Image (cartoon, rainbow, N blue to C red; front, side, top):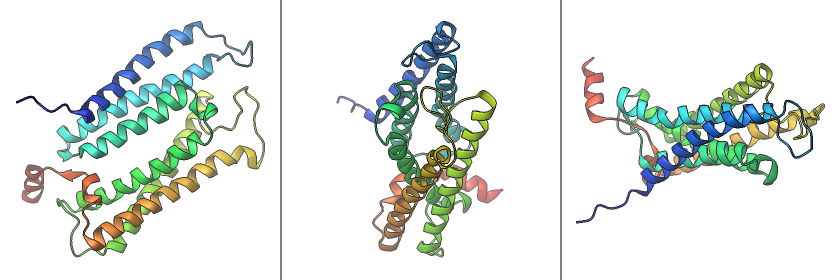
Length: 242
């Protein structure tokens, strides 16, 4: 019998190779790009540096699930891995390298809403991981678990904005979009708009996923379980023995 083609694995590997090739391409482009803009549509070294940092982090992020599964003994569902890979591809390669953040209306807003939902699903996973169980313990209220997932997702969204603010200052990047593409710095509320919008849609995405997760737990639909990270069975026994 022919083995069924694994589309999830193909897409994941495709994203990883794309990130890796982008790193090589950007290293070459940095050496060739001008230090200052010579025309409005010409990218400078700092533009390529931002892309390079993001792509390197993307390569590291793509290897993170393997580390988690083999070193920490936590199983990551294929559905969650697929969403993770698609998000990295859209955020880093399409967003930064292909300039979708500047050329596609509301691209950043869409991705932050999506990431808020993903982090909300991850929040449900942490309940099972911290309790060292394969399923969410029945003695926990669905409302409590949903609130925890929401708070977890929003907190990570705040950490991400702190990361962007820090590296914008250290490397003189523009991840928080406080400058226009031509280098003009925004002032006042206009400079805060991108960060605040990101936090608001993070909350929106987290709330939607938390509410869906609550309904899944309340009425036992099984939807949220398909996205949950879980301890491997052997790891749970070892933890309980320890």
